[in-house]
Structures are given as structure tokens and as C-alpha cells.
Image (cartoon, rainbow, N blue to C red):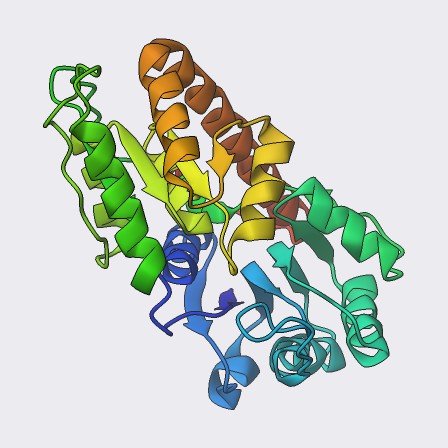
Length: 322
């Protein structure tokens, strides 16, 4: 069995590369796994038996990283193209834990709708994403799972409240500077026991290194990125999620679905209030994080079991309970 996973991999985005790395692990239990990202590698496509399309926020035509309302079918052509090649040859297509970031044109709605109605299994990473796919005319069951990056497990877990630190996962430019300044301001306040005990860091290493670092060294992550939050939950620690141009709707979906209160704009006062609230109820917050993590992981596990059952896959070795 040759499995091809396809997403926005290899372009330098920590979250997308995290999805790639964990999917390579999860699906290697069932067969030989390769990955690809646009432009399409026809050799990989032709030699593969099954397409895993996603995860990640790859469903859009209104480019979330450009000007509001800017429309492009490049993304639609890229990812629908993979699915269409497999469907032409009657090969299974699994839409895996995808996120939607804006579908506006008739052409995009039609092509996404067509491949999803013909796919073997369709799944999203949130209830909001599922609702949007139904709204464009997908007429089959859509499984609401979670972002697969939640499946990372830390090598070591440590809670040391005598040495609290904040790891800032910044985007770039002003937002990142503002995040660091906010945390530093909080750490210098006279009315907090955490005075002078904050380490401020930028992160550009691998997702697994990030999860290991947060689980062992950090107590809170302030993240301007969606996957900064997901990977922090995977590490078993709380995250203050910031609203930004690229992460606003993704972070809002995550917070709403799992009733996570710590989402705010890049405003010093709001972040300070949230840090206060988390530290004053840290044990309770940790339990909440654990519950969120377990719910998300179970959804992904259940989805993989359903895929394996539908395609009559058998594990090649022992079960991976990542």
C-alpha cells in the first residue's frame, strides 16, 4: 500500500510542516508513505494507491494572507488537481482534517464540492469548517475531527511553578515585538510572584522540538499563530491565543469549539489580565488543557480508525498511540 499525503508542506510554515511530520508517522503504520506539495509530482501521484489530502487550512480561494477580498484560484487548482487525478483512476481520496479560510467564487465552490462528494471520506478540523463545507453544497457525511498536529507527544513533561517562563511564538515584525514587550512588562510588575522569571523566545525550529521545549520549560505560551496554540496544547500547557490578520478566524474557531477563554487582540492590558487569570488558577487551567488535548486526540484517533476500516487497512506493526 502506497499512501501519498499532500498539503502545504515544505514552504517554511511550522504548522504545515508539523502536520506533515505527524501524518508520516500516523500513516506509516499502514503502508509506505510519501508526501508532496504543489507543484504536483506526477511520479508520486501515479505510483500511489491512496491520497490523503490535508490537513491544514488548504480550502480557500480568498487568499487569507493577502488583501481582504483578493481572489485567486491557484490554491483551488493546486489541491483539487491532486484529488481529480486520483478520482480519474478510481483511487481512494481521503480529505483529512482540513480547514477552510474563505470560499467565495462559484468555480471554487463547485470544484471543492465535486471532489468532496466523490471522496471516500471527508473530514475537517472544526465544527465551523464542517458547517461551511455543507453550506457550499457538500452532500455527504463530513467527519469533524481536529488538527492532526495535536498528536505530537512530548518527550518529557515538567511543571515547575517556581520558575515560570513565557515562550512567545511570534509571527513577524511589529506583532512579535509587541508580544515580547507585553510579556516583559508583565514580568517586571511588583505585584506578581513571577517578577523577573520570564524567558522570552522566538521559535523557528521543528514542531517536535517546540513541543518538547514547551512541555519541559514553559508554563504559558503567547502565540500569534494557530499552530502555536495547537502545539502548546499538545505539550499539555496553556496558550494565550492572539487575534491577527492570518490567525483571527482560526483561533476564534478553536476557542469557540473547546470553550477556551484566552483569546485576545495584541493589546497589553488584555494579555496581562489573561496571564493573571491563568497563573491565579493554574492547576484548573492545566486540567482544562488536558481535557481539550484528550478530546482533540481522540477525534483524530477515531478518524484514522474509520479510514482504516473503510479501506480495509491492517497495521504493519504495533499500534501507535501517539
